[in-house]
Amino acid sequence: MRIKARYILTIATAIIIVASLLYTNHLVKILKTEERQKIELWAHAISLVVDIETDDKTFDLVWQIIENNENIPVMIVNSDGDLLAIRNFDNKEVEELTNNRVVREKKIAKLETKHQPLKINADTAGIQYIYYDDSILLKKLSIFPYVLWSLIVVVLLFAMVAYTAETHAEQNRVWAGLSKETAHQLGTPISSLMALKEILKEQYENDEIVVEVEKDVERLNTIAERFSKIGSKPVLEPTNIEAVVEHTVDYMKRRTSSKVNYTVNFRNHELVASINTPLFEWVIESICKNAVDAMEGKGNITIEAEQLSDHTITIDISDTGKGIDRNHYRDIFKPGYTTKKRGWGLGLSLAKRIIEEYHEGKIFVKKSEIAKGTTFRIQLKQ
Image (cartoon, rainbow, N blue to C red; front, top):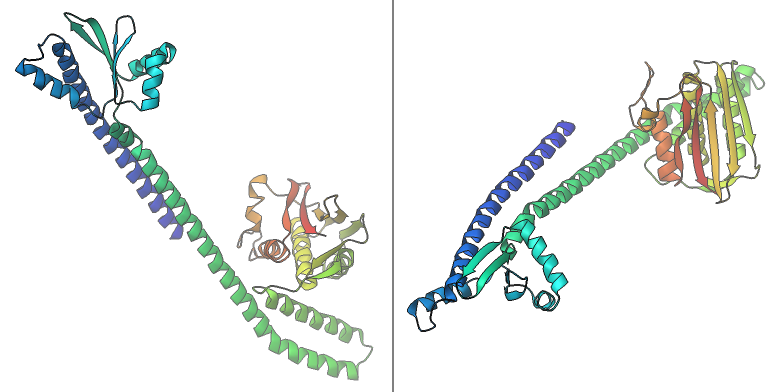
């Protein structure tokens, strides 16, 4: 429905722009015709005023016609290109056209391309030519549709940006509300399980099953903590990135097939960045889980990290999976996008939100080749 509304708004805007352009062009043509007629009348008056005696009653009428031209810029030159009269140009241009023949010739050539000059055959003064330009009103009317088009486009873009921002904010509120509600709903059963875990530890202190149950309960508690942090600004603390990655990889090894091989290579072992550990572990897990799915439970996952010269820490997570088409590099981070039959398409979307919004870093597909694998890159400030 929202996409349809955007299309309707875009089409309506295009119709308004085209309609205004066509109608304005129609008005411009009418006004140009009228100005041409005025100049022709003015030229006829100029040809007459030369041969009319100043005391003739017709002279006053003809001179009034000449004086009434207050809008259309005109130049009168003789057959030798000498300027005989100039009217309705600005003072600076009048001075240049009067004193500089080169400037005048360029101006005449320019005016000639816009309007065909009018020729005057005066009995006493000889052949003269009238060159004229569009009036200020006509020039303003000519550019009006483009100004209107620009304003409409700016307003449309502003509306679309505001609409997108509001939609994004609404999605954020939904994400935050859903996450906090999930954490709240998990709280009660986790509390019960923790109490049960303590009872089991008292009765079966060294039992391996009890130890695994304890780990799973702690895991559930970590998950609930992660969800509770979505929507609120998490606390960031200086943390050794290698230790966090090693801890996450150890967990993933126990939860994935033995056919998946993990390799961690930190070129600098003291990579410290301000992070929220539970959320950052979530990001590493999400990328690794996607890698396992892409490899169909068999392959290699390599995590490499280093510090760059600009004090940026990069973490590259590579797999030997099926790869990602270049056209989908950005799509994979959108909520709901997934290639799996079972999945919500939220893992990478949350990972992007955690890295870019909470940690002010970057996460993107560094490279990917179909049937060879994909490398994700995370960038953090040291």
